[in-house]
Image 1 (cartoon, one colour):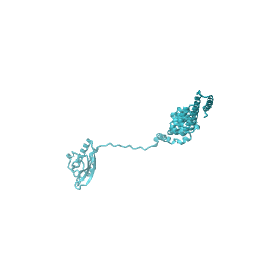
Image 2 (image 1 turned 90 degrees about the vertical axis):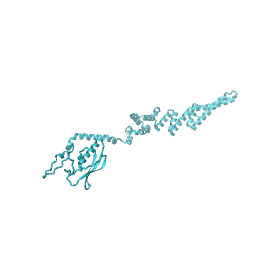
Image 3 (image 1 turned 45 degrees about the vertical axis):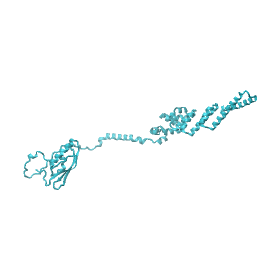
Image 4 (image 1 turned 30 degrees about the horizontal axis):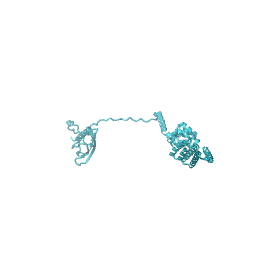
Length: 360
């Protein structure tokens, strides 16, 4: 019994072969067996392969249909090869069918439908009909969702929107708020407060009370001329302005050497002049005490002409006094010479007394 009742006969050829073992195929049934064999082989070896199967006419070599098979597959073999089977095409014969074939009775019948091998049953998911959405079901939840969304949006965006501008806070003298909102500007804000000077002491006091800033405590102590506290907080002098304030505090406390050393780092001309003046005062006090050594040591640092003149004057008077005293010790002096020397000594001693009073 022929598989295809067509005048044209067909054969099968392979192209685009990838990791499959091809063989000569003469019938659709052999093709089915070969496909099952290759599928099983590649499934067991966990391999992959593919091939293009062409159905060609024996006479015209025309391609009537084709199928691209990818191994391994889980579908039924005949389902995979279905594109090669037309309505008049071939179908794989059951093995036992030949034993029960009878001669067909010639009578008009409706053409028998070609029985297809039943496909593997597949579970079909039945979608439930979607119920129309009713808003009244979500009256309360919808309100909660909207309220929550509004709150969340506000929590995310409002802080950025409501955050006051730095310039406005400074204009309104909200210095503590400005530091809280813009901590990166802390040094700048504290400098603004310090630059207010004596007039800004009250603002600085409020700021210190609320922030407990050690740097601002340093600034406040300086503005209040509490120089001892400034020196106690000298570790907070980390900026040039605060270092200058510390140097001034040193000068005010008579710690001129410390101020001098600090200004070696700062290089401030105004501070240098202040230190020089302080050193001159100290040197004069030394000269008044006839302490030439201290005065000369100071002069070595400040190199002031006026101070050098005073030192020279005191040095000369002291040397002259010493010389006259040594002369009076000479027993060979006449009375007139002794009288003249005593007169000179008195004059020098009067000059020295004036020096002790700061008159040079």
